[in-house]
Image (cartoon, rainbow, N blue to C red):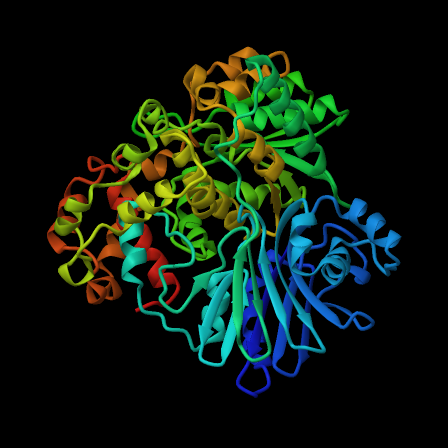
Length: 591
């Protein structure tokens, strides 16, 4: 797990090594254990290292194999690297390290761009061929690891974070109007390749991009879960299959040369991970839960449930209690850690949790992804009996933050587009072949887009802000494929994630399985008051915000006068949504 950056030139000029060096301080938190640079004519790579596998200098990056004529920078973890190393040895390759990084290089030499299909893991990497000048960029199947791109005539830069590309300079920092409308409508999600910044894009998940020395570029998607393949299994057989797939996924994610802990929320997903690790013989597993002070009558923790799991499986459990004295100062730090604006209430929670957890371990497993692949959210049941071709409106009604027609009273006229780009995006996705029902189409869209650019990105940004590697077993691509093939009625059963609940019976305590679904409670954001409200007010009244004029002033004034009434469809505070975007733009210096 690291931070990567680089520049490719195809205008007969040498790469700007200084621009790449300017990226590295922005990547330091992702890789606090070392730094490296490599330049070869028109190509320059930079790297910040977090030591997880092969702690020796043999695992340092950028990694070069002079015999093969390759150089690589890599962020992530290949969980099956040991098996691949043995396979590649059978083809005659030799290794000088015990790192997964070196395995990627040899795999690329053996299989070319198809190497990504051999990897079980999370990754974003760039690999350069010395002789030809060809560079391949790749991102893992579920987009767990990020890759941002800034392209101008004759040049392409890439980095693990958007701020790193801003630091390199020469970026069009105007606001992308389509991205803004997605932010306001599509639950603050901006689908790839767009970002809020016009001059910065992101490589989509499951995508390989190959750039030749003359700048010719090709891109292809190498994986997608099939939501039409219905395997013939009984309910019990599906539960058993999910259990075995998750058990394998959890076991894979224990590979490391440092201890691995678990973020234990007290919900089914993280509790199941702990139970499976205990079943596999893990003793004294370190687990972490976070809680906040209550506000407006809303509880700020779920310790009662996490304590049940910690006690039953005898973990070394840590309750992290966050008082108001820590919460407010963490807001600016959390916004600074965001590569893109993320309105979810639990960003601050993950940042604070990661700060404390990183003092004790460098790797954790986390339960993100189960709801998006196994239908755990509230917007899936209303799609149950809706044919795919009619499901777009039903999905938009349940999931979009606001109807398009309301934007005219909220966005300033110069920022308002004349058509509903979010609905058009969803309609195009639902219309593609490969999903049978409305529920299937929604799950496919959410796992490819919403999951990547909300929960997964949130966890990556907040954990890596503290040099903490988070692994997400529910996004093992083999488990995702299995979940996609599972009939929707089994996933929707029992209030959602029915097949997972069946799988967990007898392993996880029933009081955790059958509890009402919870969300990461962060009352200080859901209910704005006192210093937090003043922080929001200052962000929206800042000179930069007034000069930008994204929102109608009467809309902002009405929200500030009544800060806790207006909510999005899914219950987010509308005032926080606006303020978070302004805080992010101001933090990044975007005018």
